[in-house]
Image (cartoon, rainbow, N blue to C red):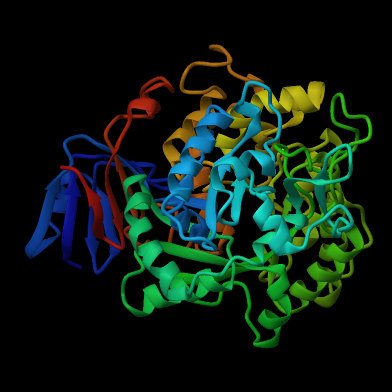
Length: 551
């Protein structure tokens, strides 16, 4: 078959074990038709086709971010940017600048602040906001997404007073007199968030349309989205208009489970552009606001073991409901207690699934993996984040066939907090090497907009375990957890395809696979890890179409 596009003089790292390195690729109708050397591929070029000399650039399968809040990311490009602002004063300066442009009653929204980078590490208050934005209701999400900073006007609109009880799975922070401080944790955030007029699907689609080039410039060809119904509607609108240029796996928030099962949605339904993933459940909170659910208390906080956002019994019921209807489950778990409880749920769920298939299993968890291999289409259940896991629970990921969906940039962003609040336990956090060595599938993402939507810095974090400024030193933070670069790239490519059940179409550079490619400026596999910090994405192809190109 003749090709309409031939790329030659490249260093293609294919992730295909049968042919790991080639110099040229031939493409037709968005699909790779052949791989090999330059002369072989040029001979396949059809009359009028395009031939491109890559000038020795490195090419890998298209990078996929396996954990993104795409609606949130897209809309936040239009809101107050507080991402890791170095001080509360700077945060308030930015807030004041935006507040001055708003009419009374119009909501002020922003995201990205974290008190951990401020000098006193103290949480901000409603009074702080009132001084610069008292005339409008304000809602500013913490970097983690598990806390919100609101002003007095927002508290009043929500009817939050000293007498308001904490909601299940959340907390209203209070001062010494019991008055709300303006900090809302976990489900308490909803008390205010539900008052903010929601964006329409059309508005979200417009924001996504503008956000796609940011993703292509980062080298991304696909993502796994974790936002809600409006996001799904907006993505469908883009696809219907022929404007969706990223391959999206759409996960379903658990509060929509009844609707999803009611219309018979199943994991894997869809096409190469937009398909159904799993049902997302929250087991706990996050490290930043110290709501991740822990076995032992946080350092210096003997009464604080975090928050169980969904208890084990409820998780089991929800997971069983999803599984029985052909929907995989993906559960957010940060703390070691949360991860333990989630694995207990998955162990019980796997036994149910085997029983339903007529494969009763009476053995222990170590033998479950063999039994699961007999299922024709086992559901691909995931744990999102797995930020700290007790060593005794590590083997259970592989035994139960659970995918560890992790975000390497979290480790370098959070390492000081992890040391401060988890102490010696931090050596078991962000444990990519330990997870991979168990035989579990490890897939990477960014959790954007919690962290930047930038896989190259994520690769650097995975292989160096240090920040761009060199901290915490040459060896890196708990260096025994470093990955080899090929392992890290696999977690952003082939592992993502395996996670979504698309490894027959995506994740490798091989004949028959979709022509999703990321072209890099530097030979990253031949240089020290620091080269990743200087590497640029020179081109991104999705379905054989250049979505981003600099040469």
